[in-house]
Length: 335
Ligand SMILES: [Zn+2]
Image (cartoon, rainbow, N blue to C red; front, side):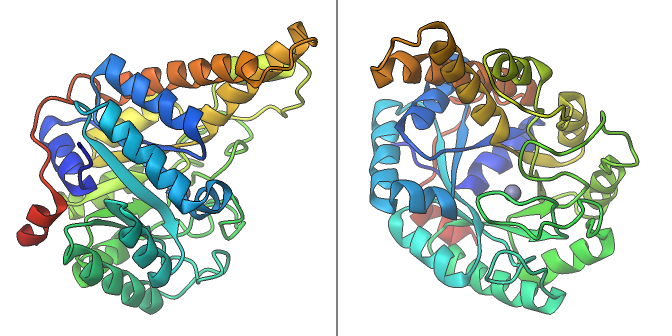
């Protein structure tokens, strides 16, 4: 079995100077697409599930699908991460279920919508850090608030309304002792991130650079970092879809982040676009088809292709065999 803590994967990434994509899953085909991409590119992987995913697929299904992945791909260091935990209780249940990493998003209140206070964020994140580190489980926190709403999670605020303050980030890390820090730099969850190609005015990469200068040993996380490539939008719209024109985070900006301390890059929308385009294409070209495999196979393959691209662009490709996975019980002793 090759389940590993996220801390180890990110420490290795920092040493090697690369980033690691964290890809969201809800079902078997998405897990398979990621694991196949990881095998083909020899990449360590972070697979993450949101609260919405845990509800959609049921915790037990998700856990056993992940267990199957770790059995079938033993050569791939695999992190099972909770995306946007909304409370200490949610993080606790994920740890009990077998996740090797959790995000406590205390930037929002438990409803997952209302921006919280700094004190509240410190309190709940610190609580999760104590609980998780005792078991060798990694903790990601968030300071600042991302734009957009995804899976019912998000403040729905303008993406520049609560950009991370570097001094506050430094204080937050000191007070919580977390492993990885998600920063708000103008990105949003979902497909509609930017209405034109982002510039320094809308995507604050200078914040990442400044935060990294203050916190050189903290692993930074970029959320909402799908690139939303036009090719994937075009496939959907060519086969009956109606996406409005939109821009994501350009890969070169993510690569600039990786040069400046970003170790985890969250990608969900690109997978969704690839899957939807492939399914629409089958429905459009072969309306007589009714076997789900006829459209889920190409969908899985389309997602695999976009994941392969991201793994290569983020630099994690080729690094799966660099290290021996350290079991969480061993990681616990290192805190
Ligand atoms: Zn996020």
